[in-house]
Length: 451
Image (tube, rainbow, N blue to C red; front, side, top):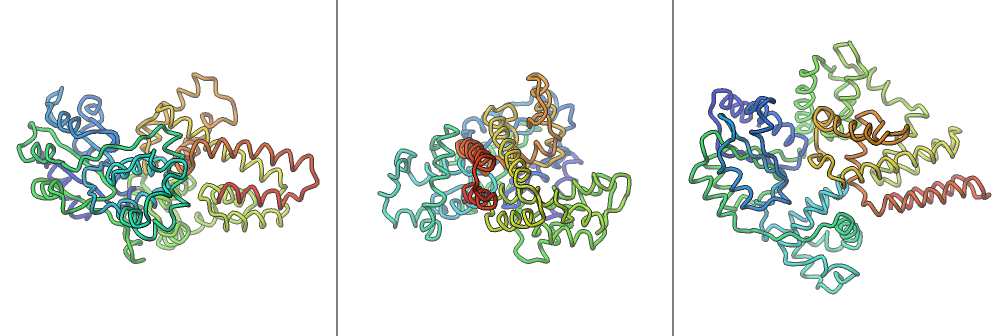
């Protein structure tokens, strides 16, 4: 993959641009990073306002894509049209695979999963009305198994209500499914205006589709699958880390990288977030070592409280209860624990409101932190200043705190977060005015949030 990407970048530097690039796979971090690298090679920052057009696949129809790639650039030189998370490569015959990807995204970004769900409904011919108010129970078991697969069909009572609630909260409706990608195929085969290029990103593709075959003939396809073996995971993680470190003039010892990998379970996105923290912590030092890992992951009380809120965000009840018991056994006051949970839920709710307001509509959970800090944070900061942001509000926090709140808010629906805030008021009152045991009260709170 690295060799193929390097070859494509060298061609771009020489002025040779493929009419279409497709970047797809489960490793969204690598897809986004590669997309950024290709755009950087194609267009200098000063030219992007008039020569770079970015669209979201789940809200962009085929006619819009065709018109965008056929319209010559307003300025001399290149024009790049990017369509992220396109559904053009979905097919009804692979609906179960698509449903599987959708449900995996449910734990990482419920909003993105809901948008994919809307497209999925259009593929299988169902509507939200068919499923609301437990109407989904009237759909035969066989139809569910064919649409989402046997395992997901058995578990639908767990995931379906969450997706329906999120669609209702965001006003998302089922999407019309365009299985005929002929217009885009014809444009690519007929040739784009000189200097124009189409870049598509996708989580899932059906390689049998004509559009995929067309791009494989005239363009470049880069696949970023999730690594299965530990050696492969280490390789991907090492490569991603090397890119970030070289940009910052840093290096990492083999032992430190191994410790980081074990801490994050070889998850590239999580590892790069931790690496960003380590780079900041290292300061002027050029090498990040195992002592830095230990310093940032020690078992101090403050760290453990943050671990608790992290477990809450991940809805990992077993982990959350274990950390809660450890904190209470260490003598951490129950009201301090509640305060940190309130802070986390409040930030998540504020993050959800910011995303719903479309102030930063281009934000995606897989976005690189540096890209967020450079391109989106200034708008958020300006919005906060215009509203006279007070201490304790998300607007006034460190950019990384805002980034995480936006990214993690996708795990919850708006209605859920509002409900949790009301629940937290009741818990605060119970801890301060009743004789109930704090351990039991907080356990029940975690069960409600993580269930």
